[in-house]
Image 1 (cartoon, helix red, strand yellow):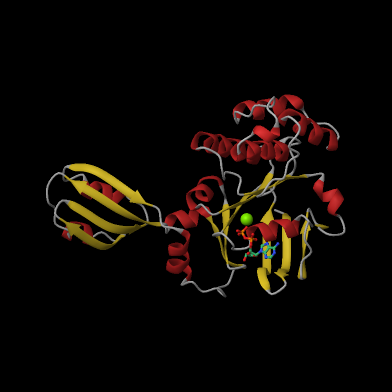
Image 2: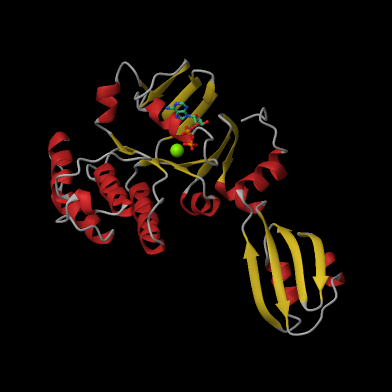
Length: 300
Ligand SMILES: Nc1ncnc2c1ncn2[C@@H]1O[C@H](COP(=O)(O)OP(=O)(O)O)[C@@H](O)[C@H]1O
Ligand SMILES: [Mg+2]
């Protein structure tokens, strides 16, 4: 598969502050690539550099094989972009805002715009001024999707969306992938990336520390599990399971860490009367520390 996005040593400093350093990244045609990192990691900087809104301190990037700086105008025709922070004209209605973008793009399928608005529960008749940040975000999403571009670059697309709308967005993203569109999605939420992406790049303090297939990630994904039993249990049977670590027991509550499939754990627990199972996803810092030892220079 050919690369839709390719960066070579892409680096951006804001004065002395590091935005992103020595980024070598390749996003393949038709894949959904998750760009995962905590706040301040350099996600927005990367995206803004890719779109030529800011100039790299050094290094370069291509999109569709074209230089992002020299061929910026040509590239943008086939890119849908959702900025992390959206500045909108406040004195027009949502629908007028979208019409304006449709016009700039030389016309789009307005039925598709209406369908998106309906699915995301976006009211086009309300003035932008009166919209909550979540609703402004929806306008931004529709604007990015409306011309069915070859490449979607979405900076934290689910921030500010309520859970139902998040699910709808995941469906829309899946459909885009099925249509052959390529998606580059930044996020600070691991389960979200696991759910919609094919590959994920972990970025931390301006450095890409690892790129992994999501399938591999799930295989060694770990989480903290808490099982509440009806009666006190002993921890031995659980300690013998190969996927289980750090087993602690307090009366009838068992706590442990699981890395890998849950099957054996569930079957062992089922021998006793189970009241509740609580699973805690690890946060990003835990993942960085566990897999990559917090090593910022780990190979990508
Ligand atoms: N315009 C700017 N001027 C100075 N520093 C900036 C600017 N934008 C971002 N930074 C800094 O660059 C680093 C990366 O920020 P950013 O790319 O916004 O991260 P993310 O999108 O992952 O939260 C942070 O330390 C941030 O403070
Ligand atoms: Mg950001």
